Image (cartoon, rainbow, N blue to C red):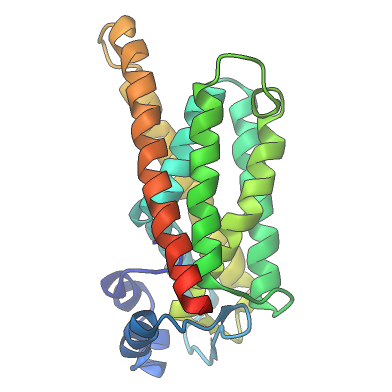
Length: 243
């Protein structure tokens, strides 16, 4: 989830890179079955993409948007933040802190400054969703409610490693590396904003606010239970691989 990209999406937006790495899908499937996926950061491929800067920018913006919208774990995390913060001015700072944090770890991973296996990262991403949903359910004034941007930043560091896993499956153009990274991050940001806008539109539908209030707690429990299930699965994967 957090570290994969749809092969169809990859082929559609990044044909040059896909052509250079024709066995990438088969290799990823085999590695997944054996649970021997390479470390994030050290294994990101660099290709000599012949496309211009404009094409690269468009391709990686679309990749970033697609990764957010197709990654249910990242979507649930953003939804948890929306429940925690609400549509208030500080939501902008909260989402911006998340963007800054995942940009830092994504960049560090791409340049080989951080090398972690994908399975523990995905487990940590799932647990971050559980924690955010749990904090949103609490009535008292917790640290997450007082400083949501700080919590978002800390968890964003983990999610950035998941984004690095997505880029690892596609590769990066050597000639336009900074542009590709910036464009991917911009796409992720746009995907987050699109999610927030759609949620805002749903909240503003002409329905009873009492009904929306009643739906809040079941929605958060659903998010938390789903993420807890993922956490157990991913932790079990890590434990089995460590044997």
